[in-house]
Amino acid sequence: MANSPAANKSSISFKVGQRVHSVGDPRRTGTVKYVGTVEGYSGSWVGVDWDNGEGKHDGTVNGVRYFQARSDRSASLVRPQNLSAGISFLEALCIRYKGQSTKEEEEEMYVLSAKNRRVPVEFLGKEKIQDKLSRFDELTNASLSFLGVSSPGSSEDISSTVPNIKELDLTGNLLSEWKDIGIIYEQLPSITALNLSHNLMSDVVTGLPQLSRIRVLVLNCTGIKWTQVEELKPLLPVIEELHLMGNGICEIKPTSSVVQGFETLRLLNLEDNCIAEWGEILKLTMLTSLEHLQLNKNKLKSVFYPDDDTIQKMLNGSHLPEKGCIPFRNLRYLLLASNYIEDLSSIDSLNLFPNLMDIRISENPITEPARGGIPRFVLLARLSKVEMLNGSEVRVRDRKECEIRYVRLVMSQLLGKPDEIKKLHPRFSELKHLHGIEDERPSTVAAGPQKMAAGLLSVTLKCVGASMGEKAPMTKKLPATTTVGKLKILCESFFKLRSVKPKLYLEEESSPLPQLLDEEMASLVDVGVGNGSTILVDEES
Image (cartoon, rainbow, N blue to C red):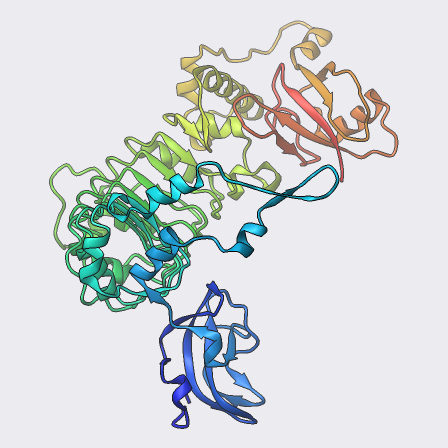
């Protein structure tokens, strides 16, 4: 029932599959799913499936299904006069860069005086800026985001009007046909960067010329899948950055067993997709120029570096890589935050990537102590080459302190179990030798007080809770075996806290944010507290 024959002239301008936006609100975009009449109502209606999912139903009204929407409440039936089919590229350009603010808009620009009176705001140099922007032949960067652009318009006029545009942002418009993108591209002889985010692009890549000047292409939230990426690949001979965020990509589907080509691609952004298996990422292993791989906010459960056997199985008799080809040989930046990684072997495998130096792996179970993960000092000690961890620079001093603390932690937990240490802590022997740490030898004489003193940690406690008042910091010597729960009770006593339930945080120089200590039964040494550590005492909200 997508198209009713009773559709009258007022709705002829709309057709099923067309991209539209709400009149007066170019940010409210959707796709036409039905054009025609509605039982019980006069005139013509247009059924729209809204991109933001904010509608009234799923395409069914009063028991009659007119179309099927993406979700239960993403659709609406709208009068044709309340929808816009969009404007041309050049019309949008004039609106954005030559449009004059109305009297009503200028009246809205004010501040309140001390007597609560409106004082108009006057922008100094406004005319000069507007004059410069309105000289289209001087424009090198243009942003036409959320203006309802639906077509190139008169293509010949584009090249003569804006001949020097290098970077073009068309985010959030009504473009969907690749041939229209090709027309705009061919009329911009200097363009090197193009952003098409939030345009719902066609599944079929047709009418698109070779984009031989494009070095940066942004296709976030365009509905594109890897099959379309493969179609675009031969049309992007010099591409350096490809952004594919928020497209629901679950699989990497190359034309062969691994992705080939993309010889110049340095950055690939696959954030906020649905990739769950690391085997899909391994299909990118032969992108020889790839330096920056962004995989935040996917569903990855593990990471591993492929050995020769894995590579051979992946290739499965297809075209072999050049002799001596190293997987991910130039990868330097790997972003893995907000996934489901929970095993230590994934952390250790990151050491096998030959040039990896910047890693983001926060908000994974393995890196969240509150979820059974490891503290930051253990994470840093296990990663041998990382220079940036979760956005913070790893300084030489920080690394040394973390590695020493890690070795001592392993020794305290697994003393006398060399086989278990070798299996669970691959870097232990290397780090123990590097920092000259001797094995602890049992004493032959009774030295109870000395032994107790050797196991004490000097810890500074600082009250930061809003209702705790000003209290001087305290430095206490505590047994390393003190649990987090026990320390909370001690803090209540040290600071005479009444009716306040303490919350503890470990403050570390190498971490931008303090680490919450909420595992009540964990010992101080288990959660990363070392000699000289500072613990912040806050209050439960």
